Amino acid sequence: MSKYELCVVLSAKLEEEEKNAALERVKEFITRAGGSISDIDDWGKKRFAYEIDKMNEGYYYFIHFESETAAPAEIEGDLRIMEPVVRFLCVKQGE
Image (cartoon, rainbow, N blue to C red; front, side, top):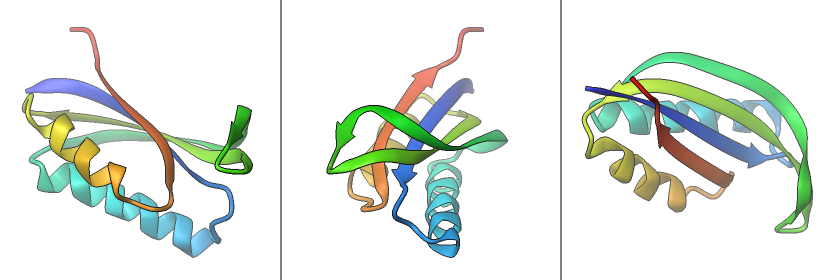
């Protein structure tokens, strides 16, 4: 099992319950891929350095999890087709 950090940026246009539902779906993707979530950092709404899809800000979440090495590719595939996700990045943490 390796440790990973997933940064997810959700659209700032989402209502509170839509935002929570999108975050639950992301957590579901991780657990379905065999990962176990250890921590979620909610950074709140932040301004982008440049405009993305006619938006200037988004909600930032950093999710720390452990999983097998094939899981991040599966999770990224799911995130790619999720509409409320503006950007995402999954990196392996150092040992």
